Amino acid sequence: MPTKINLLPAEFVIKEDIKKTGAILRRVVIACAVFFVVTGLFGGVYMFLTQQQISKTKVEVEDLRNAVKNLEPTEQKIFLTRDRIAKGKVIYDKAGIEKSIDKVAKTVELFPVEISLEEARLSPQLSSLQFQSGDSLVASKLLDDLLTSGIFESLSIDSFDFSEMLGYKLRLEFN
Image 1 (cartoon, rainbow, N blue to C red):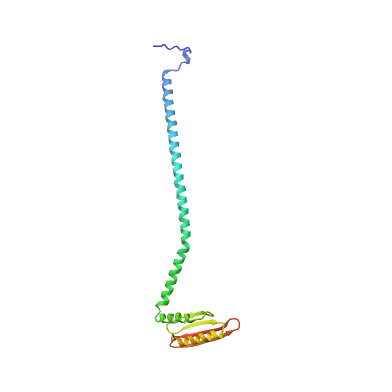
Image 2 (image 1 turned 120 degrees about the vertical axis):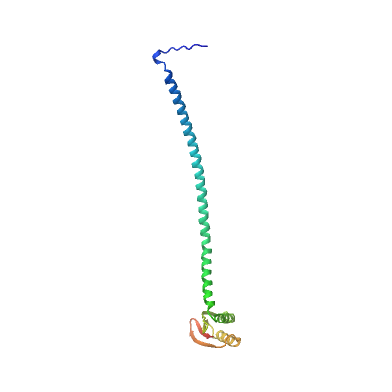
C-alpha cells in the first residue's frame, strides 16, 4: 500500500469531520442544482405547451367570430322572413281577404307596362287599387279590360286625377 505523504503543516490539514460535511454539502448543492434544472425544464415545457394551446384557442375564437359575422346577414334575413310570414298570416287570416288578393293578382296581370300600381288596400268588405298611367289611352284600355274580364262583381272609380307631370291617377274600389 502506498503511503501518504503530506508536506503541509498539521494546522493546515483539514479535519475528517469537516471533509465529510463538505462532501455532504457538495451532494446537496448538486441535488438542488439538478432539481432546479429539471424544474426549469418542466416549467419551460409547460409554458411552451400552454402558449401553443393559447394560440390554438385564439385562432378558434377568431374563426368563430368570423363565422358569426358571416351568419349575421342570414340571421337578419331569417328574422325578416319570419316577420313577413307573420304579417302575411295576419292578412291571410282575415275572413274574405283571400278573394280580394286573388282579384288584385288577376288585375295586376292585366296591367300593361305603362301602368304602375301605387297602392292596394285590401279588406273583406271593400278593397281599393290606385294606379298611375302616363297615357289616357292605356288607362282607358285597362278599364275596358277590367270590365270585360269578369273579375269584379262591382267596380267603381273612387277618384280620377290628372297631373301634367305624372299623368292620370285612378283609384278603383271593389268588393
